[in-house]
Length: 98
Image (cartoon, rainbow, N blue to C red):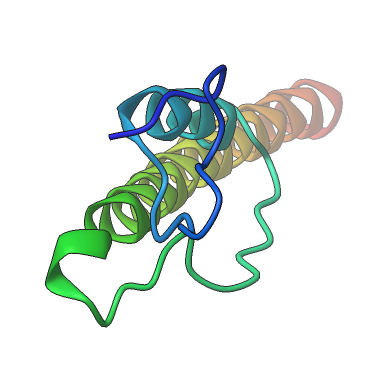
């Protein structure tokens, strides 16, 4: 594995992100509201170069699952607020007309 400070030697090419880059990307992805996935981070067709791509896609799907859970929680809060408003409306109507 090559460290970023050393660079890629002449005649070689980078085929996947390393552990340090993967961790940085994962932290950014996990905290993002919107994610654009513009291709793989490595040559994922090669067995030795797919770990970075697979890892980042897994983090992306985890972020989507978390976002869905958050949306469900907000939806239920909205329903609860609506129920409280309807209940208050019934109390007001009952007080005024009964």
